[in-house]
Structure formats: C-alpha cells, structure tokens
Length: 175
Image (tube, rainbow, N blue to C red; front, side, top):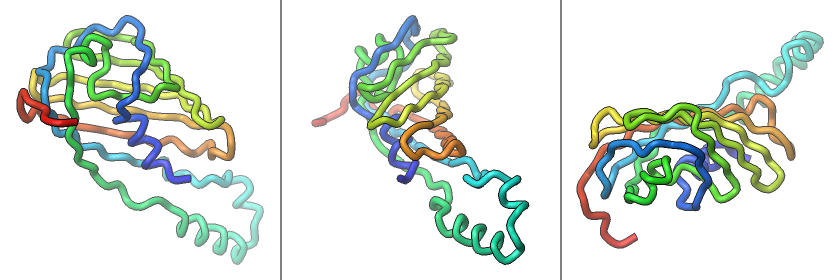
C-alpha cells in the first residue's frame, strides 16, 4: 500500500474530527492554496542485522528489490481548500483528519498549535503529531509526522508531511 495517498487523506480529508482544547488560529476564512509535500522514511524494512547475514549476492538482490519498491521521489501537491469559521473554532484548519481520528491539543495559541492524533482505519493504527503555525492571517506552515502499525504496515512507515498555505480570497465558490 502506498503511503502518499494515506498521508494526503489524513492531511486534507473533509471528514469531521474530535479536538480537545485547541485555541483558534488567527487566520482569514475563505479560499486557501495548500502545497503539501510528503516524504517517507528511507530506512529499509529489513533490519540491518538480517541484511548483514546475507551473502553479497543475496544482499544485492534484496537491495535491488527494495530500491524498485521505493516510492516516487517527494513531490509537492497543490490543492485549494475552503477554510471556514467552524473549522477554526474546532481548532484545526484545512480539515486535517478523518472520522476515525481523535486529535488532542498539546500546545495551542492564536499563532501555533501542536496536536497528537490517533487514528484506526481498516485495522491500521496511525499515531502522529501535527504542528501548524500561522505566520500571518494569510500564511500558514505546518508539518505532520505519522507512525503506522498493524495489518501489514511496515514499522519503517513513518511518512512526514509538510505544508504551506496561502490565502487566496474571501470567497470559496461551489464546493
């Protein structure tokens, strides 16, 4: 299973979420352009101790297969999102979760929020940390780091998502 779509869904899903004690960020509502970049942990899914026990030929074949499975190089995805007053009041802008997620504020001010999240989707548990900083009412930067486990998810699956968002205008248009 590819991690990029999962992280994108977790990062920009339109589903409702539960959030504890987050103070609304001072951001303008309306249409925002969000640029998201997802990277995955480059560590191999096979422990080094096991690789060290292989013959040079076996190790070369295993490393070649792992290289072939490697995800595409990091690529930025640009989307537009409508940021509403209700989303700001719930504490997380840009609809950053799925229904199966629960987010808890660790630290929250009108300019920064840090949260911990826990999600379960089709037997795969995901825990993560989200950081969002309002650089101004029209500009945001943030990051999300996830750790997956369960149902064939590799322990090395630790995608990190970074994003930048800029306000485009007050009107969102048709959803």
